[in-house]
Image (tube, rainbow, N blue to C red):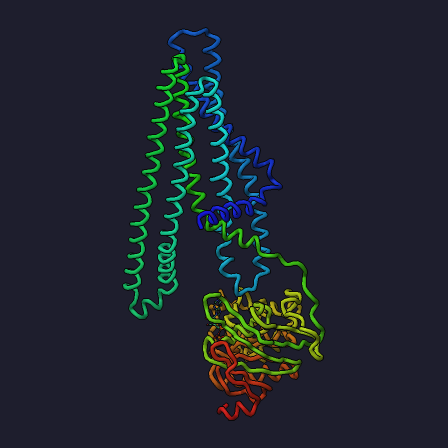
Length: 566
Ligand SMILES: Nc1ncnc2c1ncn2[C@@H]1O[C@H](COP(=O)(O)OP(=O)(O)OP(=O)(O)O)[C@@H](O)[C@H]1O
């Protein structure tokens, strides 16, 4: 299991780093600059120590002058190198992340809307992990590795035994402790994630539900729950911070122990005094460098989850083609044994649904809340492909072969064939005109007003005009006006098959009957699929399908409606 984890972690990093390949020379340059910066720091310590140790012995002036110039050059050079390295590495990584974002965005656009929201909301923060992977994990590791190699190599020139001691110390502080830090960070992230999620949910409920909590006097209880979660979160964070400070302290102490061991070994090997001092101080500096690996290891563990999600999105197949052209005039829709399951651990939202919708057919879908009515419409819009069975569309005529899946058609143009007023229709923070033109960009004012008339919004528009703004999601309209405007937009779209999900919700029964009658009259002989809770006004429908628990419980014709009190 653990082995699998490691393999898949490596796979994830490789998948993400595929985007770095075209920029590899920029990354190599940034890595060398980072290593140069660290090497300059180490060299500065070594040169300054040499200077201090030899100055008292009055060495030749030329040697002192060279050492002084070297110290100055390394001190200034380290700052300049750091600056250029930051520019180079950020430039390369931002180019890479731009490519990753573009690819993920394209994947999300191709996803069915119902399965897109969660991925979209995480896209921004998760993709930042790609940036961290390069800047805060891989580059520091590469730089530390190069400099540690150089330090051990230099020590080897002085004495193999000293080099061995230095290598052993660096392996503990630069490899073993970072692995331990990463393990603790992974464990910490697993403990913190659910606590943070609970705390975030509390905060969202308190902010978005403030009015309802106040109305029902439930605010103190919610605040107490939020405070309890915050306290638990802080307690766990404190415990984890204590452990990570202990690892930092151990790394610092081990850096000192390594320097001491180098000193003792160098003394016992009879190296010249100056070199002993230089090696000991350089070992201390190398130990500090190893500390940066602890931070890199922790960051690497922290971003694992995000990288997995990014890699998952990158692995989704892209849209291979634009899709088939939409049939002219009308379409014949068919569901055969169609089933939808949103989550593998939940019951299917729809199960084994058959529906035949030849041109001109009118079907009403009724059923209790959660029966699967909106999901059925989502199959017809192509927003969701069926998990079992088929959802097909063809030009009118006998069914040919297995039929063409709805999702095979040009998605951008599919609303010409099938669209309508869907659940939770959004109104844009724009004018009535702009909201309507979304459905048919070239529509004239007469056509806009006709659609408003059909939806029962004509009087309001006559009073306020088409250019009045509706506010965020129609906040400046009443519930009924919002519903009518969304309905007018659906009517204006005038697709081959009009879908109406609870189109008269929020209207009183008399108004609801009148609006539905007007919409059906406007449709003439073209298809309508209506989702409704009410059995009244269904005389004009060819078929009524009763859904319950995702299955067809009953189905009938107009006579069925009358027999059931419609
Ligand atoms: N995006 C989703 N993710 C997970 N489950 C979902 C999602 N959308 C719907 N469901 C589940 O699928 C089932 C059918 O939902 P659907 O919205 O189709 O019912 P409905 O009949 O339209 O209900 P209502 O009349 O309340 O709008 C429900 O159990 C619901 O919880």
